[in-house]
Length: 211
Image (tube, rainbow, N blue to C red; front, side, top):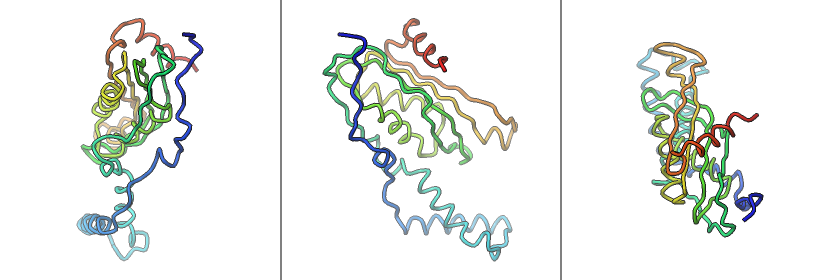
């Protein structure tokens, strides 16, 4: 087949469906807010300060949003498609932004992911790379685990010839506390199948270096 042929984009996917958040549970929000308020009181904050009067609820709603991946089940709802074009070259989505929360301190880490795979019999719509990343990021998380979960999902659902994920992120637990090193960048990678071969891996890295 021609190298100009490319996998079809899932045009039915929309930004709304890709970022769909599970329905909020008002009772759960209330319970979380009570615990947040208890922490604020324990810290000696003046809860009559108008700036703090609704902070407990705002924090509860933020956690509900930031951890919505926990509500969606064991894995992202991503549909795969037959590789009818028999495309057999690398498919890559780079510079996908994400935000997550460090499971050690519950402070944010954020950055971008680069995801690639070489199809076998099945493919996914290109917008689904971000959907998969978002699902695993929206929970208390470790960058190393996030990297492995994304590549593991691709391997399990697509059985590709190979897959590779690289994540670059800044961790506020490193920048705000502890060693306090602003700007430090953590890079993790996970490799499966054909990407263990140097030429394939070099193609991936060469695509990352291009502006």
